[in-house]
Length: 200
Image (cartoon, rainbow, N blue to C red; front, side, top):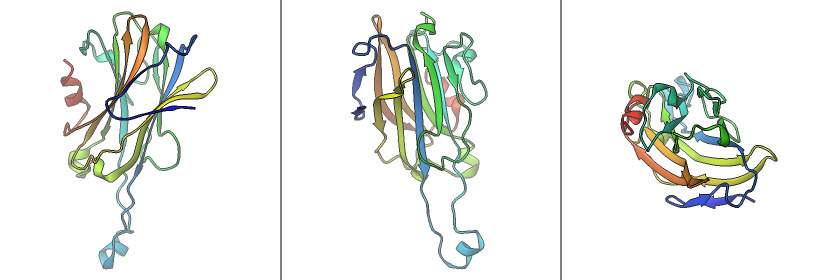
C-alpha cells in the first residue's frame, strides 16, 4: 500500500525497496467545473475553457540547472542519457488517473545529477487568465515499474488560487540512496522559463 505524504515530508525510495531501479512518476489533476448561469452561460456552453497543465522535470547538478537538455517537458520528452522519459502532453486533465507520466531509470541518471524537480505549470496562463484555483485533485505518485506497486502518493490540498506554477516534489540522492520529498509550493511564474531561472 502506498505511503501518503503531507507537504514537507520526505521518504526513502530505494532504502526499503531493494532492487528498485525503474519508477513511474504519475501526475494528475482535474479541472474545476463551474456552471455559468443566465443567458450568457447558456450562450457560452456553460463550461470553463480547458486548463492545459504541463508537467516537467528539471535535472539539477549540485542543485543547479546547468543545461537546456536537463529540462524534460512536452518539447523535449527524453533526457540525453535516456534516464528520464516523458509520456507527452495532456491538454485537458479530464478523466481519472494520471494525466502525464514520467518514466525514470534511476541507475542511468548521470552521477552529476543530484536532484530531479517535478513542476507543473499552466500553458499560456497569462493570455488565458488562468491559475491553479481552476484545478482540483492534483497529486503526484511514485510507482515501482517492475510490479506496478504504488510506493508513494502526495495529494496537493493547499489553496493555489492565483498561483500559475507548482513545484510539486523532488527526488534526490542521499548517499547511495534516492529519496522523495513532497514540496507542494505554488508560484506566480508565468511559464517554464521563469521556473527554470529559479534554479540557475
